Image (tube, rainbow, N blue to C red; front, top):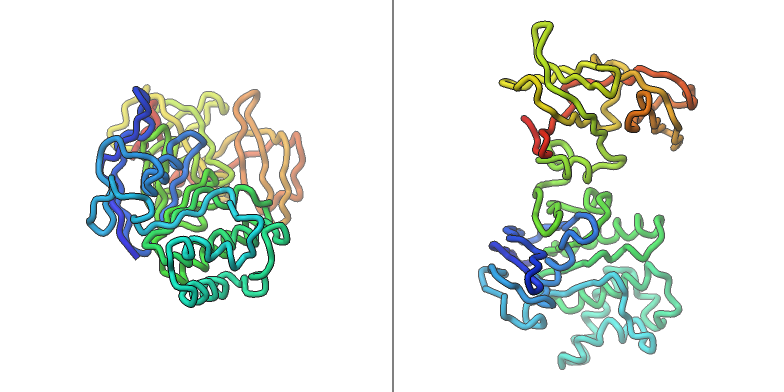
Length: 357
């Protein structure tokens, strides 16, 4: 296990800067996930750590040793890619041991490491098969095994589950989480899927446009997002965003939602300036019958998932609001509802998307 540090790391292609000053500390044994939309720079940052992309400026250190100019093969890193990249003419055993054989490791040691990795990944019965005889999940496990046998300081995963179907992705998430616990390894994992990030990570790094928007544990980011982007990216279904204006009256301060029947939502912000445009964020699960604030909405459609229902509703021609309910069986499209919620669960953001506290 190893610690890794990025200090003001930047990457430019000519005059185009794609990584814009990233500072990050990763502790030994942590599972860190880089997450963000396509083009945010997460895979580029991972490749810079691996040594597959040059660092334009800033420092990358592993265990306090500067790695900027160290060859990728000497960084103590193993990478698992989105494509399995297995040799089709080789068996599972040969694929897993190939890098070790190429590095001149003795045959007995290679056999030992391959057997250990195969036991960890439950690949023992498949060692003599070739890739074409394996399922997608089995191929991915072989690719992971090929990384394990190298005994790396740090594992890098670049969207390893994106080629798998939904059911297999869930299974492989469990496998990777189990692997992390068993190896106590330092893992850096890239994905655009926030569900993967929430379920796997000790720490999530949310990126947008080459910039780190926020770093924190999954639940910290979910409960306490720093801005509108993080609030909307973390959580499924995503947070509802309602445009409003801060006003005062009736002995207090509130947010008036003109697009939702002029509903008045207590905001509880000290020193809030009347007339300030804000966005109110409410998660679908925060709608409760006991809530003291309400929105007058009409249901457009219902998504029944068995134990829960998501109602998609709007006021007039306004934006859709997603509401999670356990009592959706009695609802139907066209019903008018008072969608109640606790104002204490609502978050406020300013016109620039920054969280108001």
